[in-house]
Amino acid sequence: MTKNYQMYIAGAFCDAGDGQRFDSVNPATEEVWASFPEATAKDVDRAVKAAHQAFTEGPWSRTSARERGRALKRIAHELEKVGPELSVAETTDTGKLLRETRWQAGNLAEIYDYYGGLADKVEGSLPPVGPNQPLSMIVREPLGVVGAIVPWNSQLHLAAFKIAPALAAGNTIVLKPSEEAAAAIVEFARVMHAAGLPEGVFNVVTGGGNPCGQTLVSHPLVRRVSFTGGVETARKVISASVENIAMLSLELGGKSPVVVYDDADMDNVVNGVTSAIFAASGQSCAAGSRLLLQDGVYDDVIDHLVVRAGDIVVGDPMADDTQMGPLATRRQRDLIERLLTESVDAGAKVLSGGGRAGRDKGWFFEPTIVACDGQDYPMVRNELFGPVLSVLRFRDEEEAIRLARDSDYAFAGGVFSRDFGKAYRTARAIPAGRFWINTYRVTNYAMPFGGSGNSGYGREGGIEAIHDYTQTKAIFADLSGAPVADPFVMR
Ligand code: NAP
Image (cartoon, rainbow, N blue to C red; front, side, top):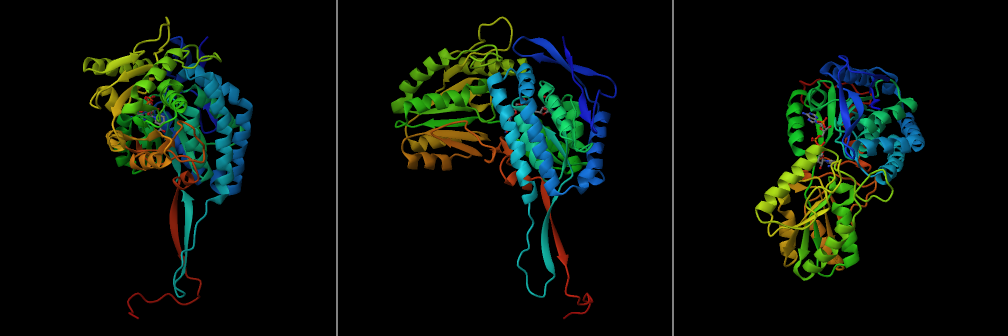
């Protein structure tokens, strides 16, 4: 039976003003399993106004930093109780492995806990000024309503890195999940409700890019937009900010290189590369999708990887022994098939996989490895967002770095070598917001992430992220008691 979800505006669960709904499909079965309100522009306007009211006049505007921290810790506490339910909703909606969504749900509580602890540590400063100058204070203040947009992959996790620092700093939020997968976020709204946040502090609107997303990012009362998604949508978000002059952060895609030198440890390479491209079915912004292998180790690494890719268990994302679930959307599978076909037609060679995984239903795709004799293939230039690895060959450190740098994206990267000096030089030479040496994909909420170029700008995670949801105010206070000087008398 289809599950009917509601969105969350001004502290209440509700339907769209005009009663319209849209369906969500389980990517493992291709069956409709849930439906959501299709928010109209008016619904989004109501949510933003509720958030604005909460920021300017509601109790949230008067809470101390410590109270905000305690609210975040209550959210963490609630998450510990309902994490398993959230993970089932996310897996059903996106096909991400239950094992992984379970782990992420556990980690969610830690993120809210972390920012809860930081809420009362957002400090201003007193710069040194001359003895006859007024007291000069720099205070940090919240921005107002934050419009947050997340894609379908790791949505709860990605949303947490927006919600937690934004609330810790004193802002209010309207969040839009992807129309492709909104269930986990709407379930999460119940957590916020149970945590007792004042009305309007947190709102969820469900609907597509337009009008729901577009109305949110261009709304005149939205002061800050935190966007995670693809580069084409990011361009629309940037255009919208021309209207409301909202501050932006853009967490976009990647085409991240993984460099393997001749002296690397083979077991580490195989596990690291498998994790870089086949974990989460390659649907990760940080996926290491361009493998650069040095001449001396090229054949050996490929032989090992082909065996490993062939052993990966593709199947039901709910099952504990599954290693790769389906792609989250049909659109994604179509894109991968098109770019792969164009590349093979142009001369790229499939070494493993290359097609739909043999199941009747569901958007399953085989773990795929493709040899490319240069970077001018569509699959090397573009983000596929799936389990497809391009493999290239290089002679020396200089060529590895040149190939790695030759991309419009700069999100992440990795290097495998026993020579730490060489690995470190490589890490420093490749533009990226995140880089792994002799490992891949390990993460921690205290570490920042984000990219540059077509991978966007801004950083999420870590202490600094709170500052991104504040702005400074410079206050000059003359405490000397001396009369204010006549501006037309020169002294
Ligand atoms: P997408 O198509 O760009 O969608 C992202 C979000 O933007 C969705 O909620 C989407 O809503 C919404 N949207 C669409 N049109 C909009 C508009 N005109 N105004 C405002 N919002 C709009 O991306 P996707 O295919 O869902 O996600 C995959 C992309 O996200 C990949 O490029 C991936 O690398 C990137 N990503 C980046 C990070 C990171 O941290 N850097 C993390 C995860 C994913 P609808 O889906 O309802 O249309």
